[in-house]
Image 1: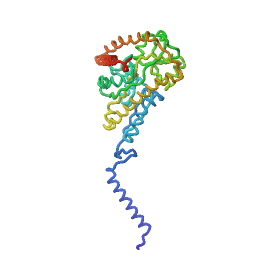
Image 2 (image 1 turned 120 degrees about the vertical axis):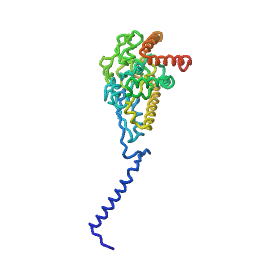
Image 3 (image 1 turned 135 degrees about the vertical axis):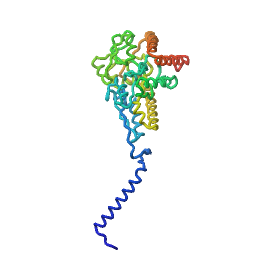
Image 4 (image 1 turned 90 degrees about the vertical axis):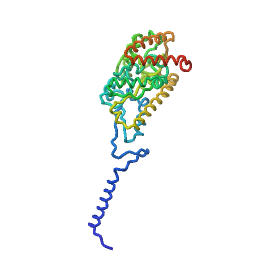
Length: 364
């Protein structure tokens, strides 16, 4: 056997390593990285990153948004990641539409009213007085009565094509949570209430004083006397975000059966998302809508019965009926705003007429 010097050995070893590296380089561009979840992507793929803000504060967002975004990120792997921000963290909630249109943020979850949308359907987002009775009314109105097409058209027009409406779903009903008992309609006079713009406009005719402030400041405003109550949610949200700790009473009369909120995207950002990930995001939105359906529905009943913090009170039905009747001219006024607004109100009318004729359990 030939004796090999250390120098000769190192030369041969170095040549072998170089050859192996060259072979890997020639074939590596054709290989794909396999993730432990079974998804394969090209090694050279650049991850899509989104900045997404919800109207909800930190506590509420754990239910109304975060589970769906977390699920999307988990399945999308290193192809796309959505960074979730809560109420007012990137921009004030009232500036969400303009920020989305400008591309400052890529996606939004909010009602149209709160984010100061430029779309002419804005007044119908959030709580439109007595438009719905139950949470299931909202998806039916969008999927079967044409509101989905109306919303998509409205946002395309209002944003010059820069904002894409994606999907709407229902949240909780609208009730008063207050620091003093509300047993008659007259008890609402002078009541300083945190509520949505359109709902506030409607309620002001009964003496309610609508107050606008950042979402996260509402609890402190209740504690310091800046607010006398909130008409922003049902009882589930009152407990979740801390308002039940700052109020004493929950009024069982409902102004609306369900809040209407939507998911939106900056059109350019949405266009860069591959088709399969678009479908994944649509499924995530559906998952979000479904979660809220049972979380709110179950919570509203459970906390009325076993919550322990808020005492229930009610305005007599004969008095509250006058509030419901005032919704008719209010709807008429809103319908005159534009032809599209008229279509929305007409959809509400048709739907509610069908529900009334259908009888129990659709309408009691």
